Length: 87
Figure 1: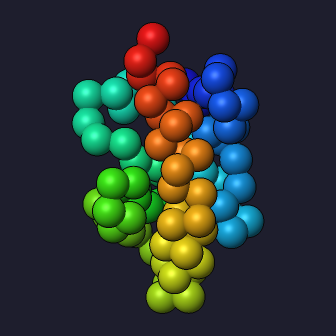
Figure 2: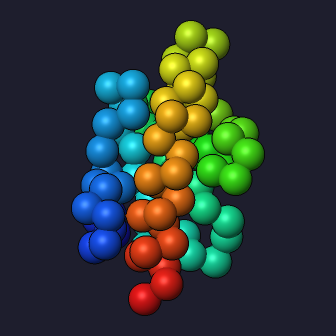
C-alpha cells in the first residue's frame, strides 16, 4: 500500500529526480527509508544516513541523482515517515 503523510502532505509516492519514490505501510518495523523504482530498476535508500540498502540496475549517474535528491528532501521524507508510523 502506498501512503501519503496526513500531517505534512508530503506525497510518499512522489518524484525524486524524476523517479518514483515511495514507502509502504508494512515498512514501519525498520528504520526510515524510501524505495525508488523506474522500469525494471529498484533501490532502497536509508534516510538516516542516505545510503543504499540495495540498488538493482541504476547506473552511477542515476544513483548520484537519487542521493542528491534524498539529501535535499530528507527532512520532509522523515517527517512524513514519522507522521505515518506514529499513528
